[in-house]
Image (tube, rainbow, N blue to C red; front, side):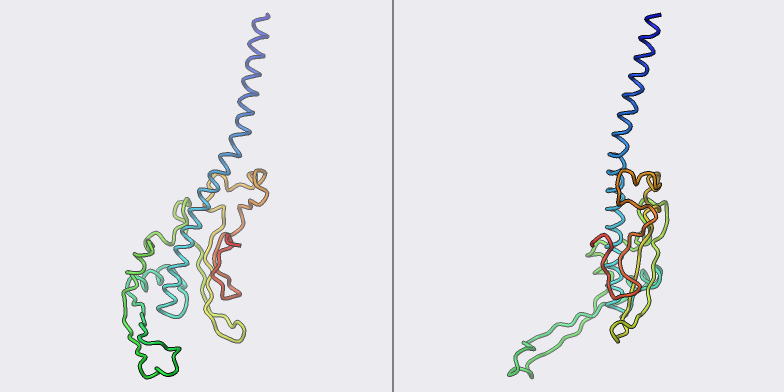
Length: 194
């Protein structure tokens, strides 16, 4: 009888140890996974923002779709203007010369390390694409291009996309959006940069 009681107590202690280890390991695993996935998404959004800026340098506006963005960056040309002389010197105005050359946008895309084929996809999301929106807006009496690109956190958090994991991080909201740009202002900052 004593042996049975000791075995039951050992089993209870083992179960309590397992529960304790699980309660410590889960928040650590959540934090590590959240950080890894969020950093990958932020890195991709930064690349999308760089690609949109190149597109705007070519066309004067932002791309409405990833297909348009890719097409223009693969086939478009960037204007490079070189200034010879000092434009700030009033005595030397006639000696100033401007030279305009054109360079393939793909050269800049490759230098920046942008992969156009995977640019549209949210990392860790099994093929979900970023939401992309672009238009023009009258801002302070001037017509300006605006863009917003992002996704909700639930799309890339996998099993951690559940609200129950907010108990480990008070600021974690799986339904919130991670994005850059703003539909109401000419701003290309990311909401992770604030």
